[in-house]
Amino acid sequence: MAKNILDWLRNNLRGQSGSCEDCLKILELIVDGEATALQEKQFRDHIEACLPCYESFNLEKSIKKLLQTKLEKKPVPSDLIESIKSRINETAE
Amino acid sequence: MVFASHYKPFHFKMTQRTVENKAKQNYTEQQKLHIFNTEFLPHIDSMYNFAYRLTFDEDESKDLVQETYLKAFRFLNSFQQGTNAKAWLFRILKNSFINDFRKKSKQPAKVDYQEVETYYNSDNVDVSITTDLRVDAVQDMIGDEISNALNSLAVDFRTVIILCDLEGFTYEEMAKILDIPIGTVRSRLHRARNLLKEKLQVYAKSMGYNK
Image (tube, rainbow over the protein chains, first blue to last red):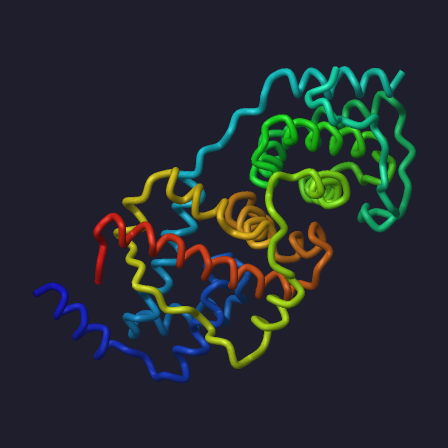
């Protein structure tokens, strides 16, 4: 049942096809914070009325968040820092 | 002290082009150490993790990071205090990787990127590959899945995702680090993200998420 409602929304809350194309082109600029203020405004206005583009935007954001929060960060081996420092001190003398 | 038996004596091939700043500073040894400790060393976690995603080997990563920092110190007069140290260091690391480590890397030779890039830059390619990947599937993924998906990408694609999404570099900074035009940064990112989505979609299907 939810599936059908979502499909209905996707079909009926769809922006003009031309503007969806433009929208998807600047989607990554928006997600990466590289869009101009004007592009941001146009984008936000569009996704308010276009579910497919809104969903694309959410997907990109969620993947970015996944990368930033769930990827394991390896700790730097402590002997590495010491080794670098001692080599530098040798060079500096 | 060596980390790996193949470690060569320190030797650079750093060219003038490798460093952004052509104007030379003239720091005292004390100033150099200060810059090194306060502006360079704090980035070591990011550097080590990036090196690890390039080499997948702890010893090679340590060698790569050490070589990068030694080069950075040796060429410190080319660095302007207070400017973007992280980008500068990442550029040195990336060049060291290409020049000295890529040959030894355990990664098999990958696709010819020039070819891939030319194809995917052409206008008739889909703006975005549609996948059935759902947000809730993504949110339910675990670290191993995203890590494997990222690692499975060719190194140039993996690199742009790391630089942009993990390290937060701007497109302009990435262009300087990678020595490519901003347009190429964008198209490579676009392609990398589509590839990543395809991998994640495979995991999502195996987790039982189907549209």
